Length: 101
Image 1 (tube, rainbow, N blue to C red):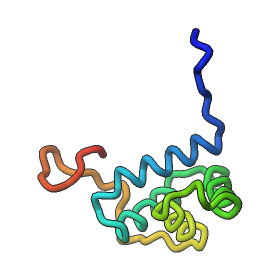
Image 2: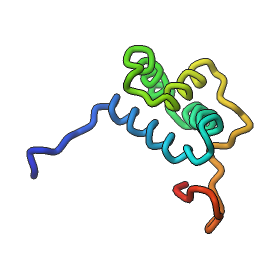
Image 3: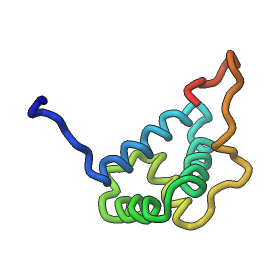
Image 4: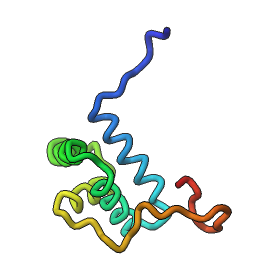
């Protein structure tokens, strides 16, 4: 086993996941991606995860990208956009969109 294995802290893992989701939604454009990310966090993250990402945003805002910060703020205010479906996936071979989801 290698000595250089890095185990992420829970904080690091939450930040990694939020930024990864943001990257996957970025093709929607900033405004819609921010809304979709807020909706995703609201729908799918455990209340403890939500509370921790909100605390990180308040205590360490420099660790969040502008999109993640905006989505977390929107989620914290309870204003995730219901008209942006973060669970809708692209069709197979659909052109012009990301097929990561």
